[in-house]
Every structure is written in C-alpha cells, then in structure tokens.
Image 1: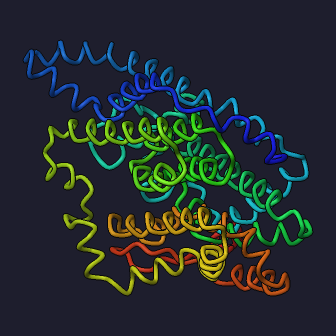
Image 2: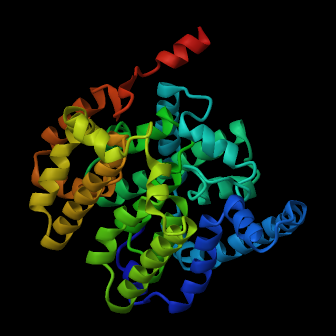
Length: 416
C-alpha cells in the first residue's frame, strides 16, 4: 500500500453485469451438493447405479466449472492486489515473528472443533453431504486444488492464511501509522493480534474465518475499485454465508449506482439459490443451523450475561479505540465503523460463538486506529496497547461457556 494517490485511479471502474454468469454457476455448485443432485436425479430415474455413474461424471465437471468461475470472478481483484502486496523483507520478518509468537502461544497442531470438519472436507470438497459445512466451499476447495488435502496439510494451509492476514494487517498499520516508530507499530500489531479475530485462528485452526478475514480486510481497509469490491463480496459468500451480513455496510455505504445494484442482485441470487436448495423449506434450512436442536437466538436470550461478556472480550481494551474512532472520524468513516459494529451485533443473535461473531467487525477497529493515534497522547495509546496485550485470551461459545487458553501452556506441556 504505497500511496493513496494511484489507488484512486481504479475507483471509477464499476462492476460488470456479466459477472452474474459465473456467480450463478458458483452458487449452484455451492448449494447443490451430491445429496441434492442425487435426489433430483432420483425424481427422474430410479436407477441408483445409473445415478452413481452419472455423479462420477458430474463431480469432475463441477470441480472444473467452479475453479474457472472463481478465477473469472477473482481476476479484477487479483490484478489490483499487486500494488498492495509489495512487501519489504523486514515487513515479512515482522509478520512472521508475530505469527510465530501466537502459534507458540496456542500451539495447536491440529484443526480444532469445526476446523476438523473443514479439514476432512478438503479431501473431497465437491462430493459433500448436506450439513454445517458444505456451503462454505471456497477455503477447503482452495486447499484441495493447492494440494493441502487432509488433516495436517489443511492445518498448514490455514496457518499460511493466518500469516497472510497478519502481514496485510501490518501493511495497513505501517501505512496508516507512519508517524510512530517501527517498535510501536510492532506493539500495535501484537496488541491487535491478541484480539479474537486473529487469536481464534490459532485457538481453533481450520475455520473458514482464516480466508474470510483476509477478504474483509481487503474490502474495508484498502482502496480497491468497485469491481474488485464486488469480487470480494462474491468470494466472501463462497467462503461463508455470514458475508451476507458483514458486507452490508460496504454495499449500502460505499458502492454507488450500478455497482450497488449488481451487488444487491448477487445477494438476492445467493439467498434464492440457498432457499431453493432446501426447496424453500425454511424449517429444514434453520434446523441445519440449530445447536443441540435449539436455535441460536434462543441460546442468546437464555444467556444474556455470557453474550455481553463475549462481545466485550472480543476487542478487550481496544473497544476504546473503536468508540473513540467512531466519535472522532469523518462522518462517512464513522458511519461505516458503526454499521460494521451493528452488523456484528446482528451476527451475535444468529450464532452461538459470540466472541467470534463480534470479531467480524474488526475492520472498524483497524479504521479507528489512525484516528485514535491522532486524537490521544502517544504515551496513553501505547500504554493501552500494552495493557490490552496483557489481558488473557477468552473466547465465548454459549453452549460451552467461557473458553480460555493460557498462553504457552500447550507448548510447555507438549515439549516438556
């Protein structure tokens, strides 16, 4: 992210309506898995052997179609990404150091919780049955195509993405906090990384969040053209259905005219194809997402204090940065931060892992950082970063309660 001056040359490029063709294909592949295709074929012909033979042809075709469409969708974004990925060796060293620190702090050598499900999915991502995972196709599919298939390789893949996320975060900090020394920038990076949106990736490796956070960071914190922002929105939807919510502030407040219409059309297509894959049976659709046969909203209503703790711990002391940023930033930027926080609060009603849901508004924190450093005394800002870093890690999942990991405890128990 060298200078903002040449970044704006792309901004007038609106999205192209033809992007809807690969989008529809991707969404159909995402939502119509083997189980759904088998059911559809069975309604035409009852021969199970014939259906299996046909599936053997359909799956490789699906794989090729999916990656060709993803490549077409991602192309404008990849082309612009070049100017944000000129990293100095020193920057890569810093990011690697911070990554290593957090990897050692949690020392998880295996995908955890749902991460394990995604790791299994990376072996055959295009031959999935209906469940929690199959719609979140992009990350396991990328692991599959790059050869990081199965449990341990998939863990490596997810941690490469964590490193990239830290590298892009540092790149952003470096260019927006140019007036503070490298030492304090590293402190800011470490303090920011001790928050849920990055710690969770070490605490429960393997979730689709690794990829989704990179997509969100690019969309909200860098100056990409409207065409690229739409590409990021689509890639977000292919990664996780939560993108419908976390991209709303961007679509409503940042995109203009034609591009906003195209982005809204994509959202409607996604929801329609999603509903169609359940034959518009919404009870069945919501049943897939119930936890222990109880909808998330009921979990939330029954555990208000736990939810509040999850929201608070998600940004620890850096809520001060977010609040100060919203109050002091230029109106438009302040609205964007507020909208991001609201979208994450909505997610907290829809999911049981409260701290993780809240963490998806992390771009609001990053946008607030430069404002915060301008408005408060540097000594106070740096002291806050240190204090924040010292608060232990907690994660909140309503059914499991408050989960905690003592830094470096795993490392010592496994090594000694």
